[in-house]
Image: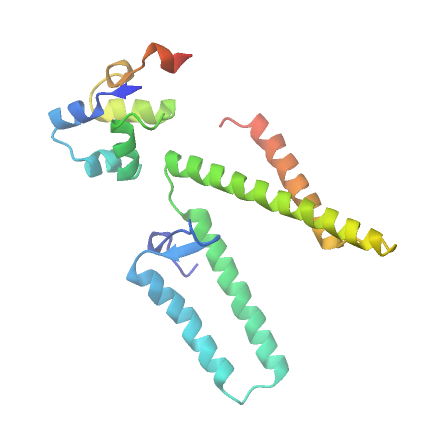
Length: 68
Length: 143
């Protein structure tokens, strides 16, 4: 899984800490999300997408191997 | 109650419970410990008073600790990490308890007086009940 969270966060001028506060998680969770090393719940994916004015599809890009 | 969850973090590497993450957390521990140590150091009290104060102090500390732990804020990644770590700890404990029971049975049988520590059996049984209740509740809940 690849994410575009960092790109969208930069567009909104948000720090990792600010995004973490906005969606109610720790900064470390945002770090792992941005690196694609954490599979979030649908709720968290939705919250992050809402906070960044994007859709889940835009933020989270799944490879074919991820879905197998 | 007394302590606040923002003063503490979940103990990850040295057992279970809480670990102070702010000076208020350390102050909380000192505020609990120092009066108790002073009380125990004074020679005026009889055994009954000492026992009553110790039991009351421990009960209050445990109650407040559980209260803080129940209110600790964790995000979903922390919940997952904690759940997997606790599951692994439970596997290890169950494994050692079973080895302990088998060891007791084997060694006592060699002495032709088979016996086993019933606390170990009770620990396994307690875990079994906790697991069954958890499965029963979680299977019906909207996780």
